[in-house]
Length: 387
Length: 171
Image 1 (tube, chains in turn orange, brown):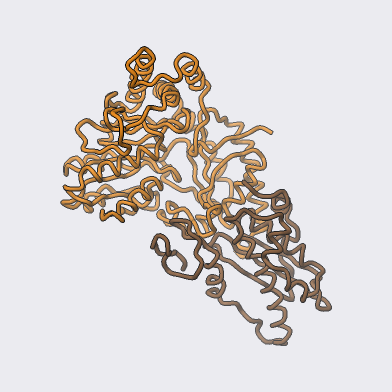
Image 2 (cartoon, chains in turn brown, yellow):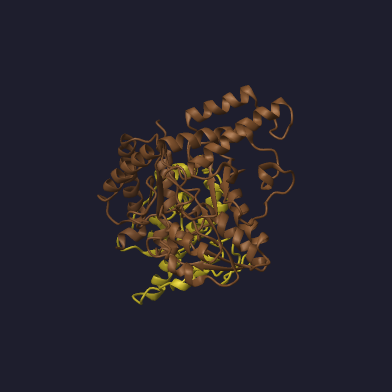
């Protein structure tokens, strides 16, 4: 059975060239600690510096503004807690949106318990934040704004540039979670007007367990992990060198191929959306244009998402669902509720996220299975007949 | 997915799918808000379940549970069928993942409700059959639901989650 992987938002496969680079690093150096002062340390430092340049180039930053982390979640925790703690004397007010990833919303919930105040900006039906709402929410004690670049469940791209401009005028630190977007669309930290940006290697065909936080020069921020002086005093602990070697290669590939990748993903997405248009009672979630090129979220009326996901998995098609029935029947996606879907519809949502190795033929094959699955489950559903 | 082979079998080829025309009893439980909803219709002859069908909106476990409970009840006397519990259904399925146990509660509940509906109709003799209020089963389901924000199992009906304090979005 051919495996068809349409779940790139959960993690991209390791690019063969990246894998080669990692194996080469293990064979040639492998265990050298970049903080060591002997020759093995020097070799590791060289790899590390080179990696930092590659990742910086991907987002048009300076190498010294890149801090390697254990992934997107750590970067986000570092950005939010680091600024909250460092600027606590100035104020304790933070602005965010109601469609953020859990690594943002749960971090903020912890801060809330510690006495910080959080203003959550609602989105419109496409999942877009109005920068004017952000402007209105700013107070004298606002120290941080954290708004995601692109949403990981519906793909909507937020007006980060404008929000960044507003933040800068008021001298507020601005963080964006670019984990979902970095690698599938081009990112320039200067165009986006951000002070902090989180990204993860396994969203652009690098290994999981390694990511980076961009910290603009002169940003007031504390480290999240304290100890040694690694990563310019911003992240203690010996670096995950094998992961970083992989991330460096993945970043340079992403930078070089960005245009072709975006175009390929867009082609797949348009093709899939056209096919989806032939089915009845399907709602496509997210903004029709301002959206990630490889991601399609759609709600299938009268059926539940997990049952569709498992049926597809049985046929070798890997997708995800955000109904999260697996974690309890009540838990509909907060993002889908935020964009105005009712609970029943939100429960019936599937997320297809395409990648650079996917083909039109794979979409054709998967679509046949998807159509059968929907038909089968609707036939069982009491909601469908009641229509 | 950590479903047993029996669960997968019943999920992929469910038995007794559909809705009996002019049933002797109807049992409807769950609601789409919670993520699953089940309707069981029965045909009774000589106090025995002659035919039984189900329709379910829900996850893989909910569909397998529906299929299994109808298989278990088919041909049984009403007395025997009332002894089928959520636990025995889950056991017959070779167990369910811990976070899916609540799905199994729907099956026996729907079956029992259908039998009660049959008794009510029989006693009523032409009177309006007892209608189950929507609130009734939302309340019943709520104790098996999980907080949408922090996943804590909600052990009692409440407007706010005990663990994280967020409001529970049940209409």
